[in-house]
Length: 102
Image 1 (tube, one colour):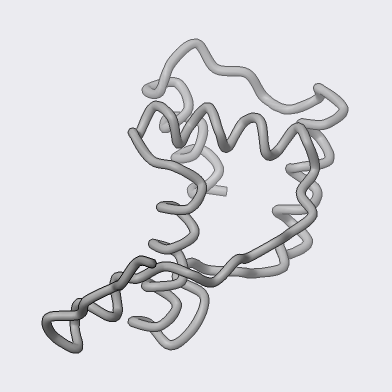
Image 2 (image 1 turned 180 degrees about the vertical axis):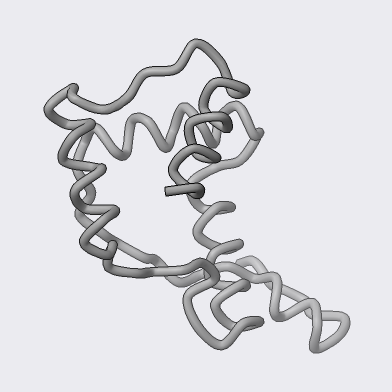
């Protein structure tokens, strides 16, 4: 027979007994595992952190938006490999400044 003894009410909050299941694209899961491993985190730790932030912020802890028309067009160009290419950040910023002047 085993017993679990709680010293304080806050200790009870650390007992993790709920199970969360989700269907995830295998490629996304693999990439997430790699990133989390580099951070020293487990899936459980990442999900717990996400839920804690949802509670703290009373919503999704990051922006979820539908891209506007200009952004969708730029994304489509990149998918077709037709986007602009730059040799460095300075060249990119110079191009942005030209666009701003137009």
